[in-house]
Every structure is written in structure tokens, then in C-alpha cells.
Image 1 (cartoon, rainbow, N blue to C red):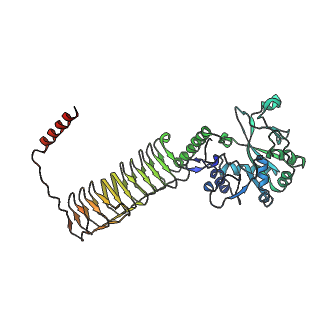
Image 2: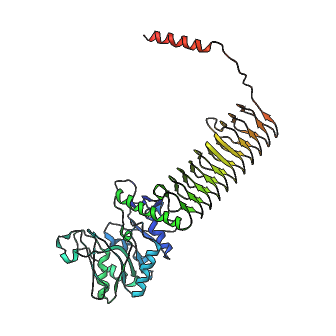
Image 3: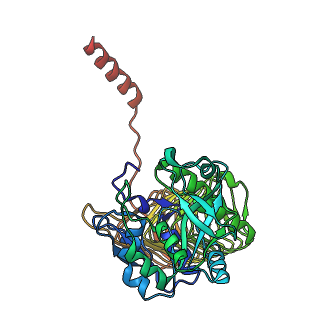
Length: 450
């Protein structure tokens, strides 16, 4: 990966790669999920709560990884082994593997897939009964018979085991190979020697074998995951106008009859209620959008947009910006750490920070809350039904009362009582001949430069 970040922590559609198989196993009904880790890599930032970790002291192969979890294997009935860098595995695939394993009453069941180009993957060699006789590694094909290399069915690295015989076989594993590693696949002939079946579950989905070893693989996996996410939402009643230009993270929730316009990105823990319209060209991160809300051409981070509220176009809602029912944050409006009460409007060209705007109030164009004094942030409160005129500067801390007004261009430094009009003195004066004076000064400066 050429990265300081551990490979399996790289995100796939907003979710760490390793979290995908962990959550798939849980959804398939796993009682315990343990992730095998190396001693020098902390994967906990990417693991869902409740995930166990087991340290593999040395990088000694897939068999060595499962051996490190010996105690967990011993205390289990059935053990499923997944790869942390195969994020496209899902609960349905795991459940199908377990169904095959149970029906076959097998000691082990291997998930396989047929590939047009099997490359260097381990080939599945079957016996006359159709069970797996062995897996032939082909990383070094020079000593592999041609008939084995011609096999297109390969091992995906996903297994289901009966736990008790697996424990016995793990204890007998040897690493007498060129890599000096313990291969999990080597337990399969041991199980057959015990008279146990080694069954195959052939998946029809080639993506079960799509792993990640570099950034190009990551892009391919992300594209597949993105396709599945979009399809899931569309089948659940969400209209996605242009899937090719729409990005939705794995954990985003969207209600039915919502429309996602082109160029939209929904990321993180975002939730969108039914009948909303998002986009076009909108980014929503870790935010909530309410029923029948409209968010157009805007950027939201950790914001809360209430039912029937409208945002944009070209609005920026920063963390803790909250719009209640029917509120509006219009064109070129920036809001942070503020609550816009029901029906209140900030229609255009305004900055609202650390403020509360009362229900039904209206904030005119060019208004700002001067919330920062260079050291500390201060609050502004605008009452219900208040009318803030254009180009008003509200120097916090300050309160404008219910039903109060401010005059155009006012600088409000003191509280405005309920129903009052707040204005500030800034008399206009005209300087005659100013343009001619500026022109003469410019000519003198130009002459001096010559």
C-alpha cells in the first residue's frame, strides 16, 4: 500500500476495510469475532465495538494466525475463517457457506470460485465424490503439473471448520516449506486422514476473492462496494438520478422516496429521512436530514436539518448547525454551532455563529454575528419573529428581543428590547472632488517612479 496506515484500516466507502468482514460475520450470527493482529499494528481504531483481538507473535502464515487464536477455536463449535483484506464478503455469502458445511456434515468446507484467469491462486483438486482432495499452491508454478494449472476453481481463503478436529490439526501443522510458514490449507488432508469430509462451497460471486494488496486493488474493491450500496438503496425505494456520479458510504441510512441528485456525496453516519431531496452537487458528512427537507448545492458537516427545512444553494453548515422544521439557510450562508428555530430564515449572504435564531425570525442579507473577540467565542440570541435588516453586524454577546428590528447597516453592540428597533449612528458625509484628488495623487506617484 506504500502507506503509514495499516492496510486493513484503509477505508472502503467510509468504513475501515477490516470492519467489513467483522460486521458480515456478526450479521451472519457469529457469537464471537476475533481479529488476528501483529504486535506492531494497532487496528482498534477500525474495529467495531466488541471485537476481540488476538496477537500473532510472528508473521508465520495463515495457519500460524489461526493457531494464535487456539483458545477461541477450542471453545467453539464451528469456526469461520475470513480474510481481513477481503471487504466484499457479506452475511449472505457466509450463511451460504455455513449451510453447505452443515449439510455436508464436513470437517471443513472451503469457499471456492471459478476464475477465467486463476493466476497464482491455489487450485482446488477434487476427488471422485466431488469433495476437496487438496489445494495446490501455484505461486511457483514450475513444479506444478499442467493438469493442475489448467484448473480454474481456486481457493478464496474463506473456510468453515468443525472446531474440535481443527484444534488437533493445528497442533500438528509444520512449516517445512520455502516460506517457513504454517499454511491453513495443510489441515485439509489431515482432516481427510481422520475420515472427515472436506467439502467445497462454490460461490457464483467472483468478488468473494477480491482482496486488496495495493491502491489499485483498493479502487477496484471500492467501486464494487459502491455499486452494491447504491443498488441496495435504489431497491429500497431511493431514487438515484445518476449512480455514476453519486457516492454513498456504507453506513449511510436513507428513507424511501428520497431523491439523490447527480454529483452528491453522503458520508459517515449520515441519515436522510423519507421524501428528502439531496443535491445536485452536495456533500453531507455525519449529518441528519429530516423528512421532506431540501439540501441543494451545499456542504454539510455534523449538521442537523429538520423536517421540511431548506438548505442552499451554496450553503455551508458546519458542526452543530441545526435547522428546525421549515427553517431556511439560503444562498451563500454559513452557519456553525447555532440553532435556527422553526420557520426562521437566513435567506442569503450571511454568517451565523454561536447563535440562536427564534422561530419565524428573518435575517437579512449581509448579516453577521461577530462571535469572536480574538480570544473567546460569545453567543448571539435573536428572538421570535425578529427582523434583522441587511448588513447588520451583531457584536456578541448580544440579544435582539422577540419581534424586534434592526436598521440597515446597524452595528448592534447592546441588547435590543422586545419590539424595539435597533440602529447605530454612522452619518454619511460626502467629500467633494475626491476622485480628482485621487487621480492627481496617482499621476504624481507614477511620475516619481519614472
